[in-house]
Length: 85
Image (cartoon, rainbow, N blue to C red; front, side):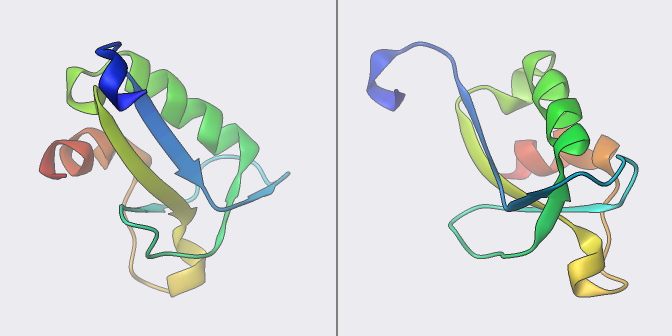
């Protein structure tokens, strides 16, 4: 995919749940995190990535922050985090 020159975004969610969206999220890259995330949240992230130039040609992982207690990032900060990577 990366060599095809076709724009892409690879979202690597951890374990999927049926919980509703709205949780704070943690983003990372490099296969460093484990946890869970709702399917609805992953769908929202994919839609946001389609609309953001910062998500183009990026790969990242995402989990629900409840795995790590108070360490939280809101979903709408995704663009800043993707840009940083």
